[in-house]
Image (cartoon, rainbow, N blue to C red; front, side, top):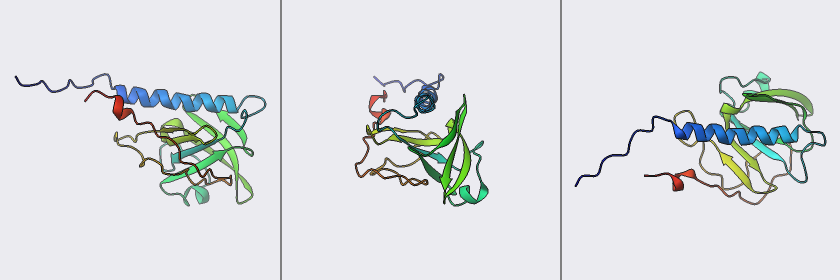
Length: 161
């Protein structure tokens, strides 16, 4: 007996899962925006595609990172604004405050090294945006880097083949 090919995913579950995981980033940013800021040792490395639609920032800054940029929200960040589809923040680069706006759809990675929590997002083409990290990403903003590697959980293991 010939086995039937798997049915086509007309619900687009992968895109729904990616959107839900970006919601985790939004929720974490909302917590960081509460009075008192980030709780405990939590801090975030956010990696995004600098050329993605909706990314805004100084040309001279974004042009130094033509593909991806990693920012760190830890001790010194200002004007965090968490919206439905994007967030805005001011960070210092070269001692000068610079404002950035990043749509959640532009994110490729979210990492909280204090608890080794990593989310990796897929690109529009459905391929991983970058290979799994072996070490913590290098931040574009000054912050101490974590020597321990994050644990990456792949959703492929749980998908029906």
